[in-house]
Length: 457
Picture 1 (cartoon, rainbow, N blue to C red):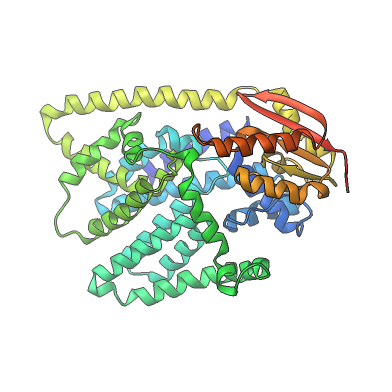
Picture 2 (spheres, rainbow, N blue to C red):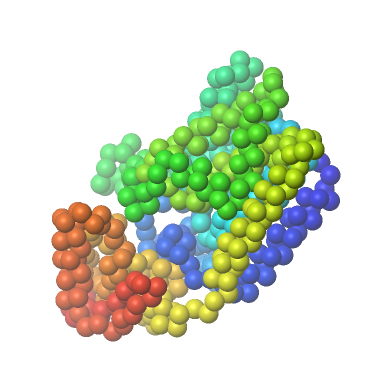
């Protein structure tokens, strides 16, 4: 592959992302959880918070930077950009392997200017890192290097549990090809060897509550429940919808699918990988735009192939250029919205809420919102998984806590679910009566309150 086009493209992407870091955005829910879990790990539970359903590698990385005195949020953004850059390079390599260099470069360009990718590419989330490693594992699998493939997909799974789908797809690929069946054992051994330390860690953490086997896989079992998150419910065609708008050039993948070269095994196996992931993410209730990164490069590669096919037909070129221009206009519009959001000044009241716990680093906060835990070294106990569990955890932890943080929007209740709404009302009453309110505000339509507990430890 010629380095110059890809190098220029990647350099352009990195420069823009670093420029945007001048204005560091406020962390969102999941980002804050990973940072706070890192503090918990490296402080042995005296700082941060712990969520049992999360994988461990991302918190370990952020916790390491926090432990050495560096800013885990700033370095988290840098690490995110590194993984996003690797994601682009893997896309180019995969496109070259499936078709040719030109296809790989066009596919990479399409992803760079996709608003959702550009928006998420420096966030402290796990989707892009896990997808990058999973796709790299696919490349090694195609090249019959099962140990590297198994290792990479094992690491990807410890970054984001659904990345194990890549392992399943590679097992299917190996079964499909008699010449690759010998790779199954090496692939599986490498995959599970990576997982073993995490399984042992889980046994140490949860063996007093569950059996050995159940404790080993406890986080996986809890995490699987999030696929039924009604708060993120979308129709089954959601991913087709977001691929069609605003970046309508992904629709050219239809042409690409219709003109796939025959008897090219790599393409067959890429389709197995794509189908495995697309079916899973389409049938689960929880659907989010960032989940598409798992299979976006393959869609982009087939789209690039479709564009190249269409460009060969002269009378079609006008429609092709028109479609690309419309897509660019829509992309610039949506992308500009994302950038302007990043550059807007922070709400000062909300910033006070996020930083409140910094003033009490030796206190314990019982919280329904994890974001302040990323900005403080205090210890946080959570009661936000759902309203019924929230009531139980609130009652269990209130007498250990110095402060209570409450936000009713942290809980999702379907409008017709009167039982859930009643539990939410009860939980709000419990929070309101827990002590003296020391901070209250509304930010973007959400309410936030902090109470100083009257009966402290």
